[in-house]
Length: 107
Image (tube, rainbow, N blue to C red; front, side, top):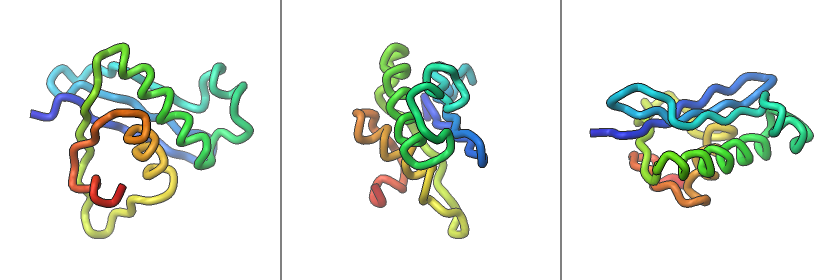
């Protein structure tokens, strides 16, 4: 069973990530650079430091919902795990969320 999953949306203007419960499909934590709190802190809403900040905020919100472990998708050979997506996942790992996937060897 995969209790929590990470969903990341990245565009040219913003970075948004959410933690979703796998069984009930309810979002337990959502963080994005388009919120007023985060906009005031960041210079840019779509760079790698913004992705790291979104990951850190997501961990804080996830702790309130008792999220300590999450599962990621296993990418196909042609998928790229780099840049902003990697920054969000790295921030989650650095701030104490255990990530269960085949990608943990890359972190």
